[in-house]
Amino acid sequence: MLELSTPIELIEKTIELIENERKVQKLQQKELALKADIPFPTYKDFVYKKRASLENILKLLIALRLFDNLKGLLKQREIKSLEEIKNESKLPKRIIK
Image 1 (cartoon, rainbow, N blue to C red):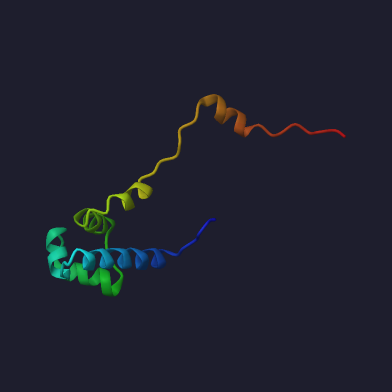
Image 2: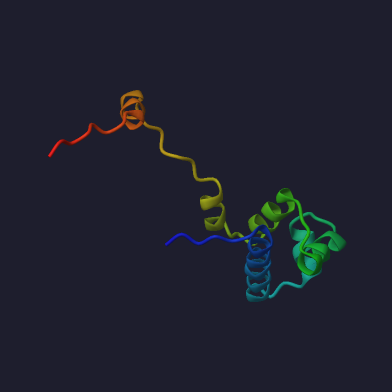
């Protein structure tokens, strides 16, 4: 099933993921910000104002060792052969009944 989300919904899910994992690892917000090498006010802006750069989100995911969450983000399309690409662009032949 295809799930469509707005950018703000994706940010909210990311905040929820990071905050839940931070609590599981028993880290204070300030400790996580330090571990991710981002200023604490920047972390607070992310959590409460839903503003952050992609770089800082990646730093937080890495600091929490949430590497599996990065796999989908960095997934590339499967490269096809030239023959497959050519065949995809051909229109199907008309079937006469």
